Image (cartoon, rainbow, N blue to C red; front, side):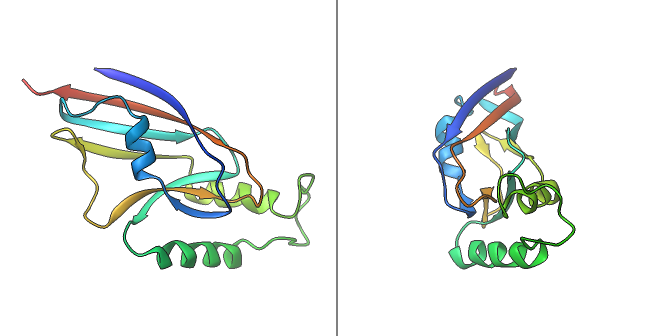
Length: 142
């Protein structure tokens, strides 16, 4: 069984955003699956997806601050700056973190760890809504 859903997330400020609930709300029902996979893909080059801490919001702030140090704006060697100082760093951050994540589905639930959540990593100062593609594959309960 394969299902694919495309959906949009409302614009978010720059930073790391917990989106697990928004993703679950957009997915087709998975409660009938015994075993499967969710592949989640963001269709942009200046935002990324990752899995990380779902409880303490200071983790999200620390990640944002670290990536801003790790990939600074206005590096003298950047040539691609047509859309502003945050443009090239956003592309680099996206390449580092990636545009997709895959999560196992077990007994109708995303099989994330106790303290794990899905993140949208927004790397632009003034980004619009973000388009995602969720592909679910799995074996139903017998």
